[in-house]
Figure 1 (spheres, rainbow, N blue to C red):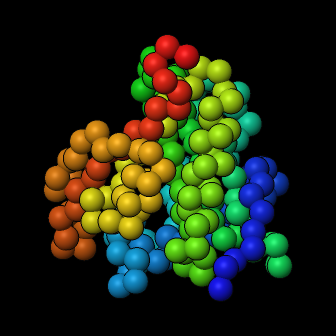
Figure 2 (figure 1 turned 180 degrees about the horizontal axis):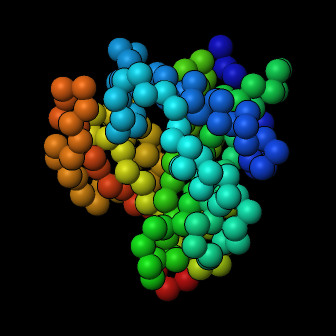
Length: 187
């Protein structure tokens, strides 16, 4: 069954609900159905408070300024439940204002129905309209082939891999770096 949704910008007023969604999403990390999608142990199902505060603060910071962030929610048209999210944020290195980092997640009930593609396409369209942004980067655990396939379908290319970067719950997990150029060089 196809899920019906609407994509909308995340506002500061919606942040507590979004944080509850994120924490529920993180509870699935490392599980038998999903595997690892975040570099943290099974059972650590809380978005760290300092990261949550930076995320929320970033929503009101102007693009191009240190710490900016924009996020969008996919909400069910039936009950307005959050089905997924995508966010773009400032690159954490100096002199990298032309790049943004992507993060995303899709609720288990809405996976494999095109929602991930729609969320990435929405963030991509927004980023292409922003003067000065030229690249979107992301990191994905090398043990997450579903996410890798999605990103490749959306035009991201693999830039490198750091094998055995994390050791979590007795497992060795690597990380792939992927990038997407927003417009041809020189535009």
